[in-house]
Length: 164
Ligand SMILES: [Zn+2]
Image (cartoon, rainbow, N blue to C red; front, side, top):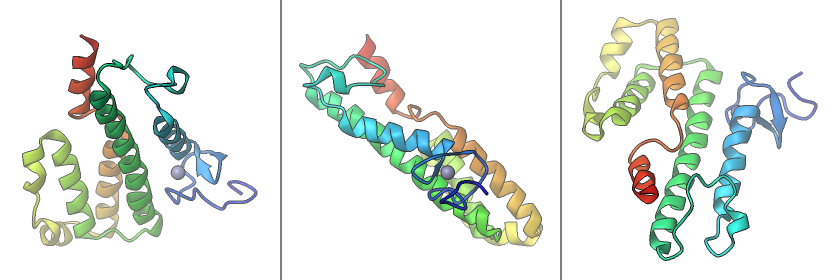
């Protein structure tokens, strides 16, 4: 049994990582805890800024809010990715459109304009790959998306600017 109360993670619906707390696996728990911390960040209370990777400039609250919101959005999205794609993998049935969606998500990470690179690939994927192959490719793409650092994307530039 994965845990006494939960048969699997309540977010990603898998037992891939050991149980941690609140019904979550270790991976989802870390993201959820970080999200709770980020939501408590308050510029007027330095003790609340635990885990904040830079020292926010009090004279620029707009920038602080923008960066905090960016972190929050990325963490929410990551938990959502694990919930939606994790559930798909747990169900076992992966279709061509699922793989097209995952390919587009990976392409978008490389360049925003690349998001439409695989538009309409669902039928080609379904023709060329059987169920096991679709599932394997989907699992690989999911791992890539899940391995991204939360502070990546444009947000890195905001952060770098802040440190200068
Ligand atoms: Zn999980």
